[in-house]
Amino acid sequence: MENVNSNKYRNDEFYGSRNENIASSISYLSVFFAPVLLPIVMWIIADKPVSIHARKALFNHILTWVCFTLAPLALMLSASVMGNASTNTESWIVFGSWTIAVVLVVVGVYLFIKNIIRGIKLLLV
Image (cartoon, rainbow, N blue to C red):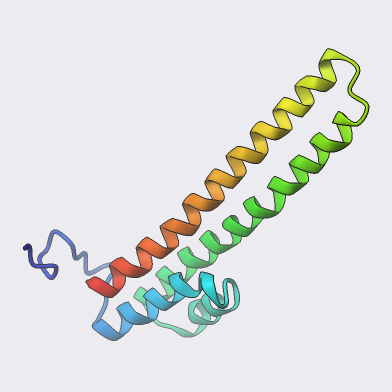
């Protein structure tokens, strides 16, 4: 088993002490309990390595929730157009809105999982 403290896994510009890594990890894993509030507080209060991770976590949390908010809106557009779809153009709008909704959900799930992975990586370094 490789040593996690080797230079392959650690870049001192982004990783700090053990306590800073735990604080940074909490800002990523806050997607479960305080998605926006905790990263904002840590970004304002914390020092350099923690504030960098808190900023990244904040933008990831915001983008995740934007994706999960816009996907149902795209499906609502699809449902409203489908109610009176009589032309070929309207069927393309339905197809496009479903495609956009699926892409937004996939991106949202990707960002959610990425936050979890980053939080766990910081706990292991």
